[in-house]
Length: 289
Image: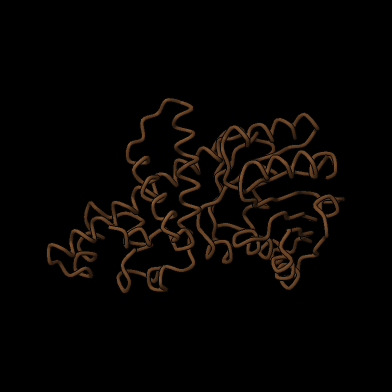
């Protein structure tokens, strides 16, 4: 299958490479010359413009920074330039309203489209073990599933257009809040004189167990290897967590939902970003507590 991949950053680069490994012909585009070169080294064919990349393909996959860019790329350079039968898959994390707006524009032009944001981070993108939360019609999901499966370990249909983004926003609000609580707990355990490895051994097998503790421990040398063991480098940047939490706050406000824990997590990550640490992994929040 010929697949255009638009957006070859930390996540998109690994995802495009996995499509090549799965036997697809990948036509790639990114504004960054370095990202384009890496994609070419991974077997992609690089094009100088989005319109040239999407010409003649069977599907278009995008991984872009925000909703404004997603809307601009699709309305200006994908819709009407990719073949009318091409499937459109946006894997960016954006607001629900923009996802639905772009999907409506695509469908009005005769395309099938899904929103398919991901969970798993850079390591999962490189390793092909992402989880995809997919919004869109049943027929579009059926076409998208094998493409997404080449880049992930789980592909889950969340519902109609925009449902993938809704699931991602809710998931990451829970992740951000639980990471803050996990960090608070380790700091409290430390101040109470508990050995942190011993506390981990207890809590990881008790009712306090959660993913932020047992799969992504914010304490160096405790639990499986995580960004905490690498100076809080790599993983999922605090700035990206802040972006997702802000999307969650906007979504909550739009439907009148009360999310006090999410609000507090958003405020803490905003302070971390203001301190110039937005590039650190989001578990670095432990250093502020």
